[in-house]
Image 1 (cartoon, rainbow, N blue to C red):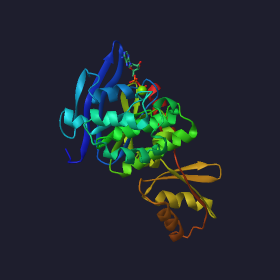
Image 2 (cartoon, helix red, strand yellow; image 1 turned 90 degrees about the horizontal axis):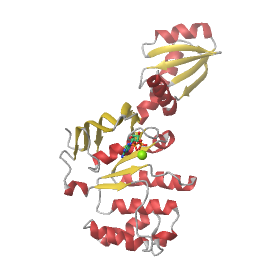
Image 3 (cartoon, rainbow, N blue to C red; image 1 turned 90 degrees about the vertical axis):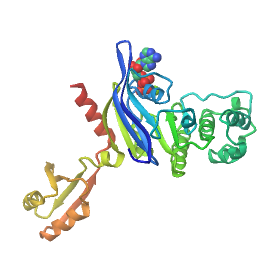
Image 4 (spheres, rainbow, N blue to C red; image 1 turned 45 degrees about the horizontal axis):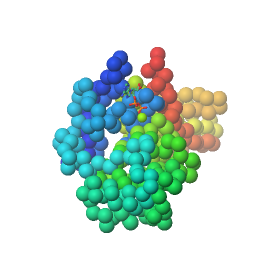
Length: 301
Ligand SMILES: Nc1ncnc2c1ncn2[C@@H]1O[C@H](COP(=O)(O)OP(=O)(O)O)[C@@H](O)[C@H]1O
Ligand SMILES: [Mg+2]
């Protein structure tokens, strides 16, 4: 195990009667990244988070935090933001945070800074009950940051928010990550994972369908549209390139699938070197969504 391991999960399984909510799931989180746990409703995300936080007992499997079983001390290094924020409605934001700091045995000195970070400093003396949902969610994030966590876990943090609220939370997550805090974000929104995460684990029926870097997932089967002055020659020249995996025809264009990591620029230079004048060259990104949907379809067969 590397020194930077935050969480390692090995083969956790959880059944509720006939339902297998989590099915032999393994995960590995390393320090500094933003991990997405992506799956439709009921795919086992919340149950997984419950297990790794020792709130739900798994039927099988193991997990370790920071290379060890979860201790009280280690638990303090994990900030948690679950769906419904829990605060005292008639206390102010700052009063609520002070209480949490006391419970967590953390210094109250950082609270003003945290309130500024989540953009609630000006409203720190307002009662929690007067807050909008977006403000409540941002306060939850501030609360989770008390005690200087190494990782922050968020379960569907943008549910129910308006577009501005959603964008605020996503920006905030990225900002928190720039402080070196690892993030684990459970979401049913592809778009959210694409925008926020560096890595993704796709869940369906509690099973891991796929995991990897979001960039790699996006890069899989990227196709390059090509056209040239000599379409007849173009195909054979492309097929001679060992970095080209596939050449497909689509209307008047050729769609080229190259090996991962082969730059478009190199393909262009290659064609020029073969005396071909390129009249069209464009990258067509295959979205994570498409990839995800394909995987789901495969699964259903
Ligand atoms: N306490 C429970 N009792 C019975 N079934 C449960 C319980 N918690 C979750 N489930 C079931 O387990 C599956 C996974 O749920 P959950 O982990 O909440 O998924 P997600 O968070 O991805 O929406 C669902 O089929 C859900 O109905
Ligand atoms: Mg859930």
